[in-house]
Length: 134
Image (cartoon, rainbow, N blue to C red; front, side):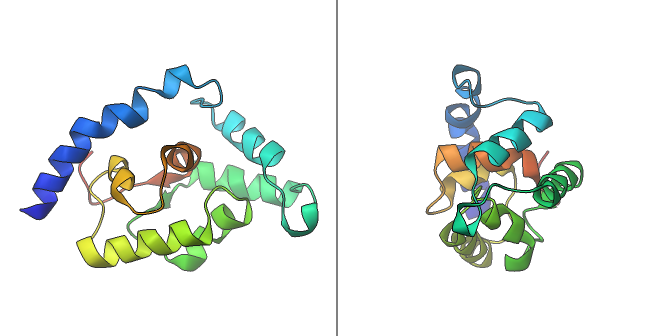
C-alpha cells in the first residue's frame, strides 16, 4: 500500500521534473548532446579532460541504459567517474532500494535523498526501469 501511495504522489509531482525540461536550454532529448554536455562539464581526477574511451563508454551506456533496479555500486561507476552522479547519490539510491524495494518509475528518483532535479535530469538518458510501471 505504501508503494501505491508513494507512486501516486510521485506521479502528481512528476510535472516538476519533466514539465520544466523545455525551459532549461541545457536539457535535450538528443543523446549526443547529453554526452557532449558530460564531456564539456566533467573532468576526471587531476583535471584532465574526458577521453575517447569515456565518450565511447557513455555512448554505449546511452544505447544500453542501466536498469536502476538491478545496478549495484560498480554499475554506477562510470556515472560517478564522469561526475554525472556523486558517490553519495549512488549510496542513497542503493539504501532507498534496500528500504523501499525496486523503483516503479524513474520519476521516483525525486524521492531518493540527495537527488536533486539537476542531477536527475543529467542522469535520465542513461537509466531505465524494468519491473516498474511504464
